[in-house]
Length: 294
Image (cartoon, rainbow, N blue to C red; front, side, top):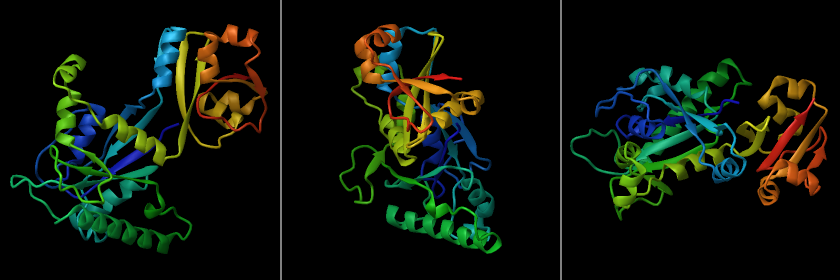
């Protein structure tokens, strides 16, 4: 299940810097508009304390976290919907994502040009251009999805500890510092008393998509976390793991994460009678550990 978050903002607000920090993928970074022409895509692991505890408990040969794809979309400018700054091309890229991360600039730097006076103005420009693109597409296809209906995450790029952060900035990140921290070793971060904020951003993206996580243990050797939409039933969840688990679904054996960790193992949990049998209508819950039967 591939879920994509598009990083959207005006030129020079720090999108590529944030993307590089999130994914540790090297992309061109420079203080000039349109440094990013084609969208870069990077896969980011979801921070998951439960997965770590299950790994320590079950000691599988392989552990696979749930992931989200972040897409670094080139900077929009006012007039993008009319093609300004290659805007139509960039706006079209946004239709392919599941949610939009609006990155707004909340710092001043004379060495980096800016196209706005405030984060509020930036957000207004971005929403206006997305709205114009929606109108254009709806004229051709009245049933097409709309950009402004996608889930959104609002993030402000700051510099250091700035007490003048506007009220619009509920989630703030120093993208430049985060990129520097992403290249440090854990002991260096501890020595400098630095705590990356990217985990909170990734969790916010997960929440914006209304996702939950369930887990599978393949043959006791592979522990896998899977992201699904809240409310997904058992056969649909099985289809995320393998198409046969959806098409040939018979039942699911389910135990909540908390019960499994308390029992110590799947075998002990079965002996305690803590593993439930669920049918087709079962809505998978966050933290379920599931074995699908086909």
